Length: 111
Image 1 (cartoon, rainbow, N blue to C red):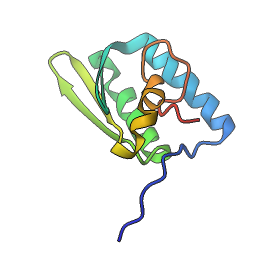
Image 2 (image 1 turned 90 degrees about the vertical axis):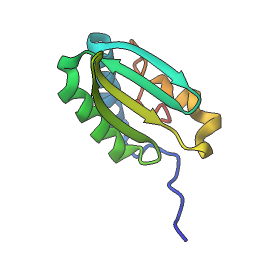
Image 3 (image 1 turned 90 degrees about the horizontal axis):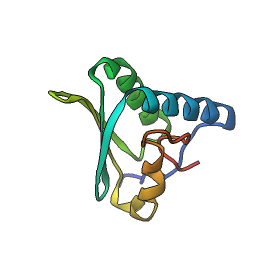
């Protein structure tokens, strides 16, 4: 039997502040649009942001293991898809809030 991954961010306060600022800056500079469909958030960044989006996904996988992050290329740009588990349904709005443009919050929004 596998143990459920807790719905919690593992960043400390100082690291969280730095991450929040970095994500907000990336979103202000490079986020073209975002859409949400239930427990999935899709963000489309300018193609030139590919490296930063991959870095964002890797960093968030490390601190918010309960979310799924996928990075892909499309004709429109670099696409980041974030999916929350069913167990996080009640917190999904908060969890996704940090991924929208101009938000100065953690991408996971849980801390």
